[in-house]
Length: 107
Length: 119
Image (cartoon, rainbow over all chains, first blue to last red; front, side):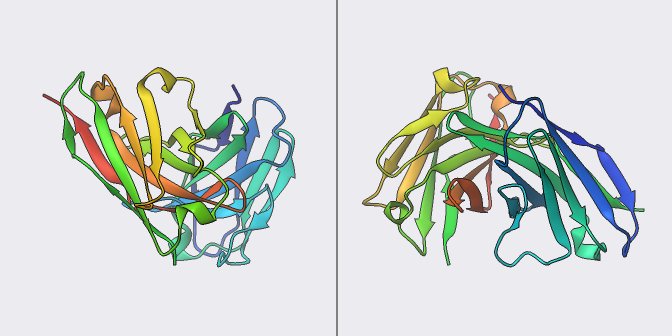
């Protein structure tokens, strides 16, 4: 079973700063990785799929890269509404796995 | 615009079976040839995938829950359902249903429903 490890657990930044979140897989997942954003009391929302493709309606300040075992989500300039929890997810023909999440909080 | 809504009891007794239904509106389950999913989130914790179903009825489950999970689909009602048997307090969570998009990623999700396991 593939394990996804996200770091850091919590990231404290100010609006306007750049955020870099990491997701590491225990073995290669190719490009089968997605990123979700979850705000308190809300369902997760898909941001990025297939490692680097922005979902419909997602602002250009969100970008992602990686393949194999190491992936990064970058928010170029934080807006107040970006402070939330971010999860990575891997999908395969055998199942789906989520990382434990990174909480992005206002410094 | 596709919308999903979970429904079912908010309180289930230990050892009983949790049953939830996801009703899809704004589109047909049969129109998406990918897998619809159930995901849960214990209070204050992360996301756990439970299982997924294709409109044909084909399923696959999280191996850690497989012995207790059944997911089914009713295309005539545009619904799919989750049953989780022999529940314990560890099954207390917000349960989400989700639609497949861009092949088999999940979006959108339902708003989620909190199920508490307690006597």
